Length: 393
Image 1 (cartoon, rainbow, N blue to C red):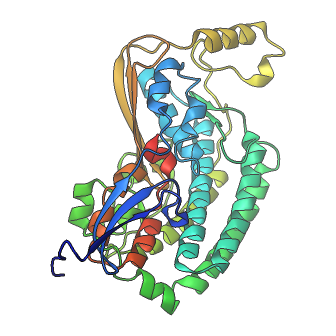
Image 2 (tube, helix red, strand yellow):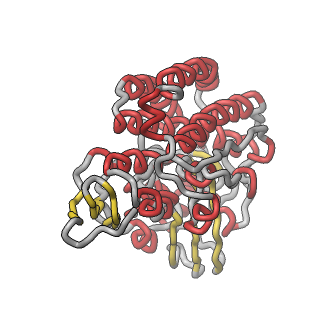
């Protein structure tokens, strides 16, 4: 592309009230006709100071705030934080709780990818897929409500395990969903994968090489779409993921279409991981029994004075991990989600720094869209699958 003269370049705002920016993201676009010359993301419209709030919360009180990061994947946010605190405290989580966490996080991954597919397809002009995906998400939200009592901000995972055991009927209903989902996934593929318009809008668009993807720090489907086989569940297994049999799909060209294919395969893999975890779900406790650190079971509070005292002490006094620092990461639906916690030995974290995948993945947008048409910006943003809740924090 020849360099555009100053007279030819037009600067326009895309967002922050634009539906295809998937949140309050503002892009400053410099265009030569319809060709993108430069793009500058302008973030911060949703900033809530969650990392600063952590310094004034006890370790248990901060769990509900993690739901408000990537609000489409609350279980993954809960798990990453809980794992970091458990590492700081050096406590072991019961095997049953680990498997329950896997089930809930993989259902969350399916739910998150379904919303990505629904909105990504709608951005490019395919409306039917939107309704299909939300049909499946409705079933998943019912399952989440069975377990956590809520459909969106779940706060289900606790330090030491999970808030409560899986309710009666949950495994049966989840198994019905898992058995039906592969057929639903084939419906999505029939509508999109070989659709000529879909191919024209996604193939060769938003290309980023494996080397550039690594240098930008991309993770999740964004880096795997470029052929880099990086998945925290495989490279640094946590919560018994090393006992699950699954593959890590990768693309070849690093374009919007490859990122689409990678996420579709991840839907299949998450479905199978959920099935495996349910088939091999061990008996035992769903939360560790560590007084003064882990909240006691709710059903014990009405029967045991000791449990009531422990609950009162943990809620009012908090827990005081030893001074030190830890970093723990999980494979969230959008990529590597990390929590860095510094403890000074008091009941409040001295510092919490969150490494959100959406924030890092967004940095590569200019590399992907410069030289492309304005319409391609919409396709690229959709393929990144960003959520402004974790970008702005």
